[in-house]
Image (tube, rainbow, N blue to C red; front, side, top):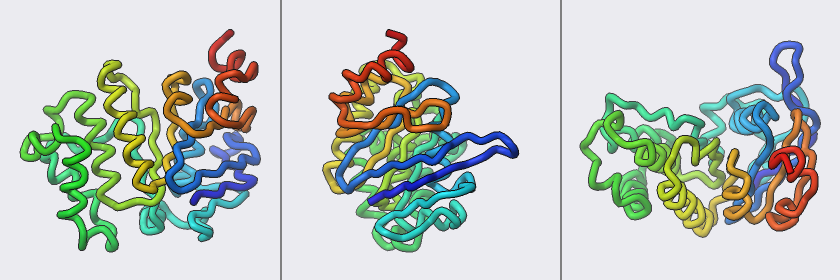
Length: 234
């Protein structure tokens, strides 16, 4: 589904990513963990076309997308749930969702997709006519995920989905992520909560100072001394 090879990225003269290799398969959940400032969000933005790669390759279903602008990357089946949710607070829940279906391949099926989002997050159906700015943080996160799903992606990128949420809401969000992956969507999750991320993922990557410092199955990373030292402080 997703193949990242030898990917580097800069901010001006400062290098943020160094020769990153990463894969996500269909129906697989992969987590990115690492300390603050490690380059996790930069990696997500570079995959999504929101930040230009300096060198390297990003392929989705075998198609090279690293030089494509972000608004066209969506057309290749990639959707992003940004850090901080970034819903449009002055618009209703339903209008926020409909914005996610602007991609040509998603417009024709937006009614069915909207029903699927409501099945995944029933609270959004209850609040469909409510302004998004009046929702709780957890409901806004559900809305941000639902809006991304309206594009009918094959690859879903989530940046810090648990940020600022109560533990019971985090459980709901990660349960939804598992259900999304079960439909065949490849999922890449950036998450500060390492235990939660590894519990939800099939595989993971540890990013440190813009480089992949460790990779493996969730259980392998849980037992990795590098992860314990660089992220957990153990």
